[in-house]
Image 1 (cartoon, rainbow, N blue to C red):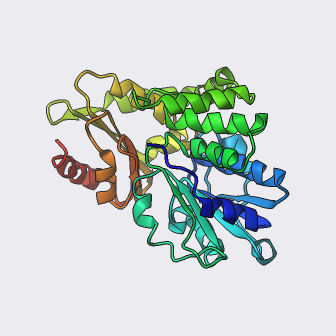
Image 2: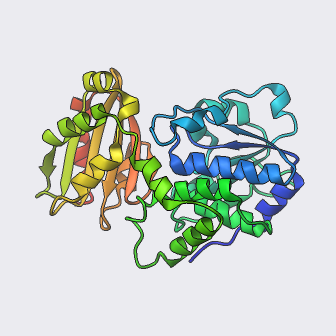
Length: 333
């Protein structure tokens, strides 16, 4: 069931004159699209608005957005500002921006299951003294879907630029609707609203899936070639070394295509890709089909995400992490 936009959030927006719109570090299309669409709407309401992000904007489909965000805030910019945090529920997920945002009036818009825990951890309050306005809908297909609902709750409709950002985020988080099941009628209804407002699905598909480098294709081939199955073929695990990251360029990576290929393998229920981002640090991407909840695995290592798409960071080497991951997956197979 779709969660209605809380009245406390509408009051929060109506009462503020200056807003800082923040999201999580290493943003994806849903996070960046949500931030920029909300910024545009608030500006139309006559508010002063700043979009901030710790970055980095690694994904080719969003790197052109980077110039729309600031990575630091002056005392003057913070003065009297309200913060709306999107696509995450705690300031810690904002990375280096968290230090600039602490102590400011805060509202949260998120669709991750772990956000329910964060609801009681923010420690911030609205200007009226109420609890932090918290718009959480774990069944929402994207946060841009929720931003559309906020726009409509404000008695407005998205303009063309906003609609494009909203549909871009919706397509990002649904895998261009590959992850929508028989409960997803509202997802397509929202997409229709965005298209009527001027969003072009064909152009958004080209933005998400075009512009990839040859190196990204070569890197996919290398990772596919070393993929190994476990638990009777239900888990596929592979990895990318630090040397490959340096040679083929982090910014040229195309994870979505890699996951699509591996999910098409017969019998595969979950996918795990480890990447040695730096000599001392790994990142892990987890994907699954319907049955396996990879957010449980991610949470065990301090990460999070969705049931079918999650991840985490790990201090250490691929070689020491692999057996730990296999041990964790024993609990879900």
